[in-house]
Image (cartoon, rainbow, N blue to C red; front, side):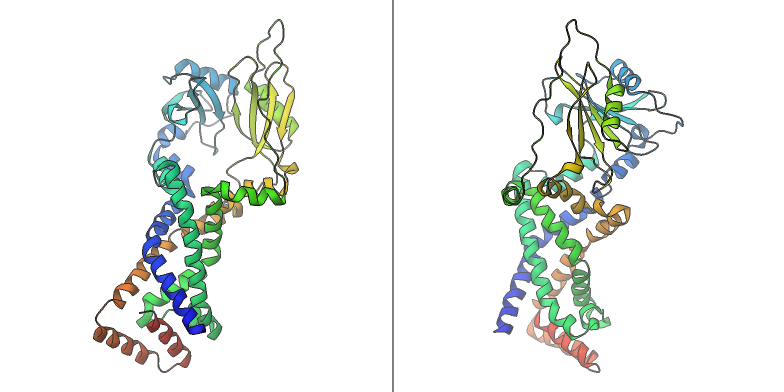
Amino acid sequence: MRLQLRKVWLIVHRWLGLTAGLLFALSGLTGSLIVFDHAIDEWLNSGIMLTRNQGSPLPLSKILAAAEKGAAAPGRAVNIYYPRVSNGTFTLYFREPDNSKKADTTEVFVDPVTAEILGQRPRESGLVAVIYRLHSKLLAGETGQGLLGGLAMLALVSLTSGLLLWWPLVRKSLWTGFGIRKRMRVFDTHKSLGASFSPILLLIVTTGVYLTLPDLIKPVVTAISPVTKLPGKVKSTVPDPRTPPIGPDAAAQVALETMPDCRLMSVDLPLKSDDSYRVSVRQVGEVGQLRGVGRVWVDQYQGTCLATRDWNKFTASDTFFRIQLALHSGDAFGIGGRWLFCLAGLVPATLYVTGFMMWRRRTKPPAARRTIADAQLASSAHDSSELVAANEATSTR
């Protein structure tokens, strides 16, 4: 019975690897790149996204005024993003006030020291943006995102079946579970890499299920713990007679006072007379370094805090949803975790190549297969543990 079940898992693992494995490999390779998407984008576009000027950054009001005066972007500035790195630039997003489409938004890059406009481009353009859309939606919008959700589920089955096939080997000895022998490099590389990186790959795949199919996961999580709803339209009180807005610098200062020791990430500018400033921050203790979940809404005239979204007041559901992307990319584990996840992204491609090689060898004529198997068995016959592993490998052909 156990042998029959093992054969079933072997068939499932083989054909999932040969079919869905190719897309899994593509997702892994693109994922390795977007682990460092911002850094790669800055390297490719250093002329507009980085500066050599040294000194204290100018106030947001001067950055905004310079951008609105000198940029050729249509519409008006709606967001100001702080420099990501010490030599980075301010990024301002311009669009028509009544148009919320990202495709119609222009990024304008401004030197933080001189307020010089270094360049502009359509939002989500460039090589890194294409790689990101390929990774998250297969360049096919919501349809591609749904396909990737199904792929993540299949990858979960494939990884589980691989571990079930590998488990008898490691129970025999660590060498049979992780060792790589000269005459069985392809098989041993496949099972050793898959087993070694399985914890990370399983984490990437399970978080990928949520990120691609959130509507499938959210009802389950929110049934266990309530989720905090974001404030609706937070309106400013329009004074009579009307006074000028306090400006983005004052709004950012209110956010710093409301959430001490936070890191300022961006400021959304009011577009209508009753709109408020929305300041995004990263709070102390948040999981992941690249994004911030804290929000402070500030009255654009009186400079009072109207509403907040506070990481320290998150429910279990709030926290679960917030950390999924940080877990998926390795950002939750710092720079070392990001490098490890970048390396893990290369593993599915290696598994696909080695699995394909084993399948191709299995399709050779029976006489040729017996010759290969006999040679492998003979080479490891001096060690009984290696003989067991060789028999396992032969059974997969």
